[in-house]
Length: 219
Image (cartoon, rainbow, N blue to C red; front, side, top):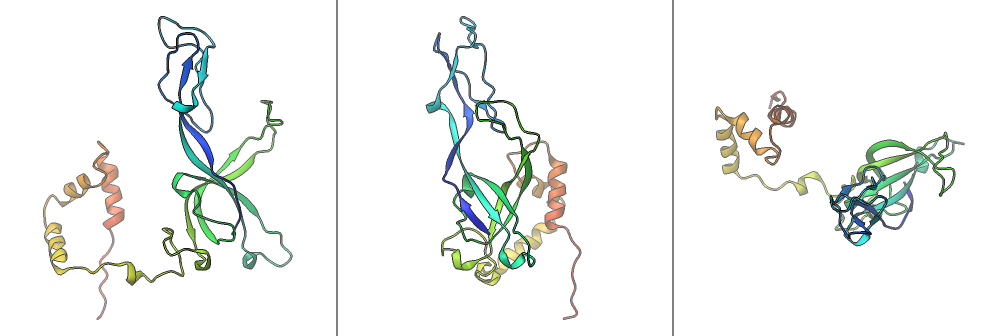
């Protein structure tokens, strides 16, 4: 259950630096895990001044970030037990998808991060702080869900209401395609066409998507 949500935090993703001596701008530098590799020397051959680079905020690229505090639901806590809490790190489209009081199911990566002794010191503590890097969130409580919410809900509309009607001509077209000798190559080319030279990986994903044994019922 969500108990706390922070405000939206702008997190830098690509940094641009400017030389204070010659005014040269660097190419965007990708920020990895919150660390910015600041150049120590100007990349311009005519300048190459040392320790002259400064960050240009209005040319950097930022992304939305939000910290959400998650706690065990009261009905899942044993008698006399203390509810466990964990922090969620949500980015981009996941920001503001949950509010305090919502019951959610989260899929993410459990990570650990160092904690500094002081805000101005580089020394870190021996104990790490853990959090979940959220990849997907699913609301399970309809009472806190709006009608136009894009997230999944267990108590929402039934599956039949979401399935569009199947036309018979489409079914026949799929049957004809299944009889083609190069159907595997066609499907491989249609899966993520922007990604090249990974045909074996695509075939493996296609087998997971379409593979299976035929189910024959007595009726």
